[in-house]
Image (cartoon, rainbow, N blue to C red; front, side, top):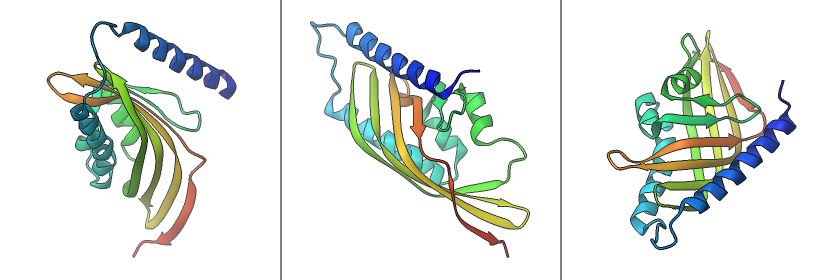
Length: 177
C-alpha cells in the first residue's frame, strides 16, 4: 500500500517533471505564451466548471473536461481517469440525490504556453445529500490546480484537476418534509 507521504512525494516529483518537460518542449524561436484571448477563455472555463455543478447538469460538467481527463481528488482518494470513470465517481448509480448549492473557484494564477495552461487558486464548496427523508449539507474549502489543454476543434478543456481540502464538515442536517 502506498502511504500518503509516498503519494505526496510522487506528486511533487510528477509536477516538477511535468513543469520541466513543458519548459523544455517550448521552442525558443517562437513565442508560445498565452494570448489575452486564451487567458479570457481559460478564465471563463474556470467559471463554467462550478456553474455546471450549480446548475446540477452532469453533461455541462463533462463538457468542460477532455475525454481523457484525470481527477486527483483530495483525502488520498485514488486518481480517476477517463470520462466513464469520472461519471462513475461523481454520479454513482444508486447514490442518494445530491445538489450543489455553493461552489466558488477563485483563481490566483492563470499561465501556460502553447496548448497547455494551468489555473490554481482557492475554492469553497457545499453539497446536500437527500437520503430516506433526511437532508444533510456538507461544506469545505481548499485549493485546486487545473491543467488545461487546447483542442483546436473544442477549444480549451480541463485535462487534469487536482484539489485538496480538509475532511467535509456537516453543516446542517434536517428531516425532509
